[in-house]
Image (cartoon, rainbow, N blue to C red):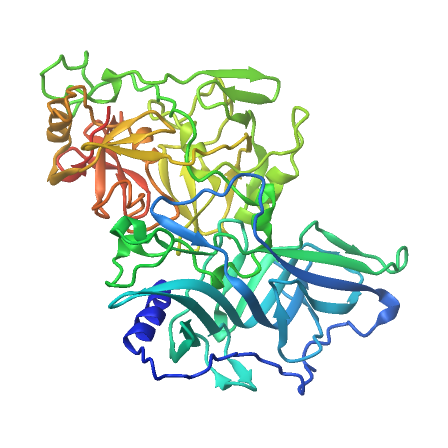
Length: 586
C-alpha cells in the first residue's frame, strides 16, 4: 500500500501530455437517496435515550509529547480530507460482542474532516459506553507532490480510496482497495485508477483498524470517555468531539537525501524498502486516542541504558575468573561496567536513578489483555500521581537484569516480581502483536493483544532530541544514550567468541576501545516502527534482517549468549557456535 502513493506519481508523470486538458476528478460521493434501515438497535426509543452529537474535527497537532519523526523522511499533513462513513456503533467494553449501532441518515455520510463535520446526531440508548467503532467506505485527500521526469514539476496529488466494498453514485460498485487519483500541475491533470491491498493493524495508540469481510472499520476509545447515558437523571443533549490528527499522517523520503530540492518527493527511481513511508494515511483515519497522553508511549530512549549485574564469565562453562586482556573470551558483558543499575525506593514507587523513570514498585494484581493493561495503568493513582501508563518496549527492557534468573530483575527494588510475561505499550508494526518481556529468563518478544500478561506501570517526562543519530566518519553517534556505534556491521557472520575478538581488536576512526554491545545496549538502536529491518535505515543503512550478537551470556546453559533480531526486534539466546553478525560499540 505504501508503494501505491509512489505508483500514482510515476504513472501520472510518464503519462504526462501538455495537450491533456482532462479536468480533475472530484470523486465526491453523495449517497443521499438511500436510507440505512439496518442499524436500528434501540435508537428510536427516545424514552430511554439521550440526544448525542458526534463531531469529527481534523487537527494539525496533538498529544502530550512532541511528535517523534524518523530521520530522512519528510512529513506532510494532508489537505482537504474527506471521508465516507457507513456505520457508527458504540461499545460498552472493548470486548463488547454486540455493539449498539446508531442509525445514520444515509448509507454513506460524506464528511469534511479538515473543516469539521458531524457523523451522527440523534438518540443514544441508556448505558455506559467506552469505545466506538466507525465503518469507513472511502477516504479522499490531497498532498503537494513534486514529479521528476525530464524536469521537476510541482503539483497536487488527489487520491480517493475505497476502504470498504460498497455502492457509490459516482463510481458504482466499488471493491475494497480500488482507487482513483488525479495528478495536477501547471493547469494540466492526469487521471488514473487501480487497486491495492489494504493491510492495517493495531495502531501505536491502542486503536484497531480492521478489514474483516472487505469492510474497513476503526475501533477507538471514546474521547473523554466513558460516555454515560442516563435519561432518567439527565436528559441534556451531549456533544462528543472526535479529534482526528492530520499531522504526520503522510511521510516519504526527503529529496534532499538524493540531492534534490528539500521537502519534495523524488520519483525518478523506484523506492527501495529503506525509502518507504513510515505511516499509512488511510490506516490512521479516526485514530483519536493518539491525541491523549495516555494513548502514546516513548519510541526511543532519551537516557543512558542501565547495565545488568552480570558478574560471571563463561567459555562454555562458568569460569572462576574472567579472561584477561588478549585472551579468548575477553570482552564479554562482565568485563565492562557501564551505567550500573541504581534504584531508589520510596513507599510504593521506585525511581531509576540512571534513566529517571518512576516505576510502580509492585504490580497491578491480576492478568490482563493489552487494552485492559493500558486501562489499569491509566486508572492507577499512586504516590500522588495519576499520569501512569504502560511502559514502552525499551523502557521495560531497561529494568531487566540479565545477570539474574527467574526472575530477571532486581528483587530488592522490585520484590515479588513473578517470572511471567509483562506487557509493554508498544505494538509490533504490521503484525497485530504487542512487544513484551518474559521475566523468567528475559526473552523479548510479542504477544497476541487478547492474551494475558502482567502489568507494571511507569511515569516520566519525554523530550526526544530533534536529531538522535549523527554520522561521524565511519561511526554513528547516538545523542540520546551517549553510545557510539560502528556504522557498517561486520559483513561476515561469526561465532560468539570470534565476534568478541573482532570488536576487541577493531580500530576505527582513530579509536581502539571498541567492544561488543551488551544485550540491553543493542536493544536501544531498534526502531519499533519498522520491520525487516527493525532499525533506523538512514542512521544504519544496509543493516540486514538478521540476528546480531551481544556480549551478554546466560548462566544456564552457559554455552549460549543473547542475540537481537533486526527482523522484528526480538531477543533470544543462541549457542556460541552459531554464526551471527556483529556491530561494535564504544
